[in-house]
Each structure stands twice: as C-alpha cells, then as structure tokens.
Image 1: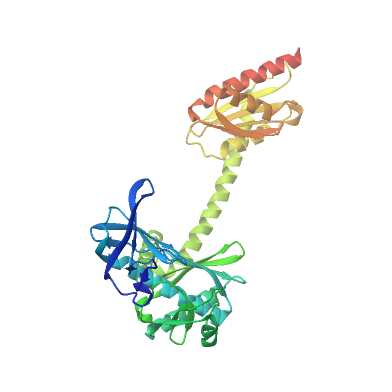
Image 2: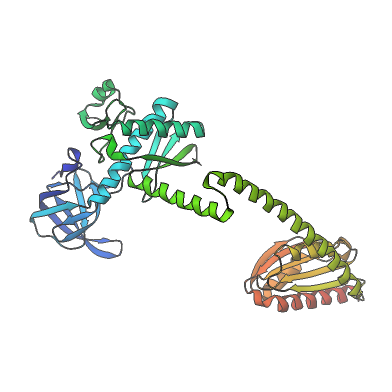
Amino acid sequence: MATHRIYYDDSFARDFEAQVVTCEPCIHGTTPAWEVVLDESALYPASGGQPCDRGKLGDANVLEVRDDGDEVVHIVDRELRPGPVHGCVDWPRRFDHMQQHTGQHLLSAMFQERFGRQTVSFHLGAELSSIDLRGAEPTAEILEGAERAANRVIFEDRPINVRYGTPEQLAQMGVRKEVQRTGILRAIEIDGADLQPCGGTHVRRTAQIGMLLVRRCTKMRQDWRVEFACGARSERLARNDFRLIARAAANLGCAPDDLADAAARVTSERDANFKEVRSLLQRLADLEAASSLQSAPLGASGIRTIVRAFDDGTQADYPGFFSTQLAKTESVIALVGLKGTGQLIFSQHPSAGKDMNALLKRVFERFSGKGGGNRGFARGRLNDGAQVDQALEFASASLQEQLQASAG
C-alpha cells in the first residue's frame, strides 16, 4: 500500500502515530536490520540531492529511509510488530536539511533570474552543499551578487508555501524549471522569488533559512560547482574563518585587515629566498664536484667513477645539483644517493658510453624500489632508505665489472 507522506504538507511534524504494515529482516551494511513499511510517515527518504531523515519508530532507531515507489521504507535496528507505533524525527538534522534545501532553491533562483545561470544538479553534504551551474564561469561579482540577492529575500522573511498542480498549471504560474513528469506535482513557492517542483522538506518562511554564505566555485566537467551553506552551518563557517584569519594575522604580526598584503609580502620574500638558496646550493655543488673530481682516480678504462651517499637531512635538491655538475665533465660517471629518503641518481657524461637506466634497473633487481630514466641520467627511490650505502656499493661494483669487461 502507498505510504501517506506527512512531510509533504507539514515539514515541521516532529512526532506522528502510524501503523506498521510490514517488517522484514534485511542487512544494513554488514549488520542485521529490518525493513519497515508504515501506513504514513513524517520521515523523509533520500531523494533529489537531500539525505534521508533519522529518528525513531518506537524503541527502534531509524538507520535509513528509502523511497520505494509509492512506499517509504524505514531501515531500523530492531524488529517491530505489526500494529500502532509512535514515530519521531531527529529534528536538528531535519531542520538543518530544510535550511540548506530551501536556501538552494533561493540561490538557484537568483543565479537564473539575475545572471542566466541554470542549476543542473544539487547535493546536500554533511558540511557544505553545492549546486552545479550550466554556462560560462561565474565571476566573483556574479557569485557575490547571487548571494546578496538571496540574503535580501531571506531578511525580508517572505512566506514559503506548498503548491499542487499539473505541469501545465505550474508553467502558467511561472515555474523556474519544468520537469518531465505528468499528473499532479508538488511545488515549493518562495513568495515573489521562486516556484519549483520538489518533493523535499522546506522551512515556512525565508528568515528560517538563516544567513546564506557562498563559498568557492570550481570547474566540474562542463559545469561550475558552487559550494554554499545556510543557517547554523554558515555561522560555524564564518566563525571558523575568523579564527583562521586572526591566527594567521597574529603569526604574520599584522592586523586582520592587512592579512592579504602581509601574505603577499611573505610569499614574495619566500620566493626570493628560495631562488637564493638554490643559487647557493648550485655554487656549493659546483665546488664539491670540482673537489671530488680532483680526488677521484682515473680508472683503467679511462673513466672516473664518483660514488657519494649524502646524509639524511641534506637538502633534497642538492644530490641532483651535485650529480648533474659531475656529469658535465668528460669521461665521468656519478652514482649518488640520499640516505633516509632512499633517493638514487645515476648520471654520466655522454663520452662515458654506459647505460644509467639499465644500471638502475639492475639495482632494483637486488633492492626493492622504483624509478627510471635514459642512458645518460636515471633517478629512483629505494623502499628502504637505510639501504642507500649498500645499493651504491652494488651499483659501483656492477659498473666496474662492465668497465673492466669493455677494457679487456
């Protein structure tokens, strides 16, 4: 039998009396549960981007509410006997969802009416909700304009009513978005602002939405996803934003209003320092490479092989600078590693004529890791950073075998 949906006409109904029509065992996730169908229910099933309600049926906790055609199916944590049962709605959760959903209707109406951006989907999340807009990227002015227009309607405390009618009747009334359904449809009307077919739960007046706060806008396939929050959610977000701003301003030693300029200054100084550090590292690598070349003996094959394992804590880019500088010298091969991170870098001057990528692969046959490159330069990482010394020793021995074989 069809379930009479109390929330269609009264979204503020928190308690209700009903009859248990059926109660069948099922599995909810991995735990035993029961599917309960009532003759009527105030509990909303997940639909149209809005999550389902929670609540209780007698002593049973409602874990989930599903829409199954004409019936509303309640997933509960214990068996219920056929007959009368008292139901109640988790009201804080319901009212929060009502604020977000009605806020979405209003925000979508403002985007469409004022800026020609149609909403193609809606998602009510645990912290933030979102709508996907069709069309060109909304500018900051458009986002702020839609937010301001929506809040103006909220502050005017306009009435919100449920309307019923055929698609043709709703079209004559100025429905925002026509739906491909027939028969009598339920629609939510925000006085003077919006009329939209919807089966969800909504507040009675716009002031109950509370403040609406638009957050970020990001590309989502061919559309633009706009995140927003209403009511207590927007209050929490605004308060958290202020705490973060105040903390950041204190760390930078500036007033909150000067945070953007202070952050830009710190970023500029960081970038300048980064360039200077890289320049100093390069100069140090040049000097160390020159010193290593002077002390490295010339092999019987005419190749100088330099093996160096840097201690953990060495700047991560430095081994690369060092090995690259060594490889600029004719007949030089550099086998370099960084302890702790397991980084390995094998490089050579083209005149050395060996294959650094093949040598690295041979190392990974003995020691677990991954990486790659080409004949002149190969880079990888050991799974165990403590094996850098052993890996370099193995690579050096393998290379010497190759050099001796080619010399013979």
